[in-house]
Length: 515
Ligand code: MSP
Image 1 (cartoon, rainbow, N blue to C red):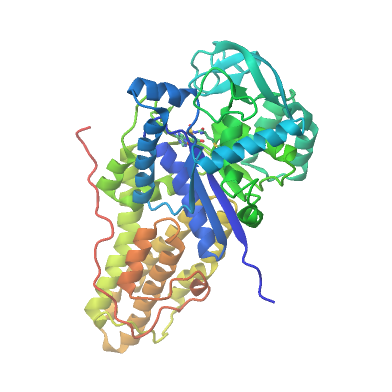
Image 2: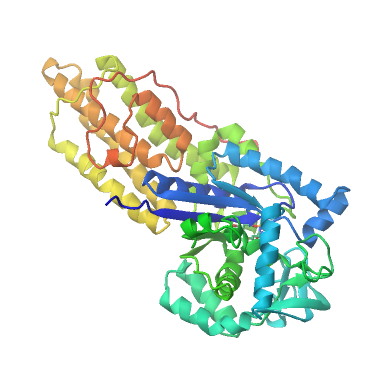
């Protein structure tokens, strides 16, 4: 019987379109894209979703300031965001907008279902509210100055009639779920934070509607209320699959395999979201990974602080793959990491120019010079080859292990280790000396073949990370062996093909000294 194709459902958070996106949003999305592409390469049926979280008071205010309707305001930003994802080669399968009529209708149905089951009830809300973060806080959660613990701005006391979700009812089930699914939250430090700071002190019921603003999905049986942002936002992961109206796609892809989220919203994804799903009697996602932030000069990149450039400027200046590579390689996934143009330039020069670009250009130039770019492999091996070939054989499973545990930067490090070894192999085998000795022609052909094979195998493994570059390398190599299966054996590069003309993959970037 044919094995059923395995599915993989991965999501980014849906971003607030309160201003155009910055490199921090790109960071999450590039990593999600690399994971999605990696799974596709491995043969999974991948559903990769991103989108925008468009309702709420903050957007309402922004639109008012700009003198347009909220919908007009967000439409413009979404057009810009989609263009940005295109320039970053983001291969999403679905882009959800919370203003999509399908989503709005489905959220209303979900809300009604929870109400009918008794999991949502009407009460009065009194609380401390941070408008920029759209978050309610309890006294004990505030920072040392009595401000919002996330953005450190002032909070206001709010009192109004509201609907509540019975979060408290699910406390025990949630703790049990954590115990039985130790990998649900990654990295583990974030799980301890959730348990100790939020769950163990006791879950309070959650305010899920508002009457103080209009820009939201109305509660259809009580239209004085709009559905407060977290039910609207979190359910995007299932409404996009048709839930609760049309379950075909939903049955295929749900539960999500991986929700990638920034560390500040782990709380919503690992407490509120599982409890909502329990109330709906639906399976819970397999994993929530809370990554760190890209920071600039020690602080978060922030739309409200305005301390950033349009990411397209970096793409235009350095190329899409330099930006992707930086996001994927520079910061250990899970930790915070500094973003600066200088770090981006250094990373590009050291890895993409010196290691990858250099290897490709040196090898193709030698193949052209000695053999007119015709590829052959007489298999005249020497001991010195072992270090390289044994590493190549081990590499796919090494990378796989790292990718399965989402150590994306380490996966890239492992691939670049091969490229470094290959550059060293050129120095050790000294092809220019072999070329002077006619009895060594077959050895020289073998050396060049080995190098070309390193380049091909690395290019296959690099496809999820820097797809445009891999594509260029495949063109130069004139090879059809680009599948994941083709790297299980060393030696799949076709013999008797003629390589195409080589060109520079990455130009060295001069460090700006006048800044
Ligand atoms: N709309 C909510 C998410 C709802 S998901 C059901 C939201 N939006 S957001 O636009 O404020 O942030 C979304 C995500 O952007 C964050 O979780 C984080 O992943 C990412 N980042 C925003 N700034 C970032 C950095 N400076 N660095 C890394 N990621 C950052 O929260």
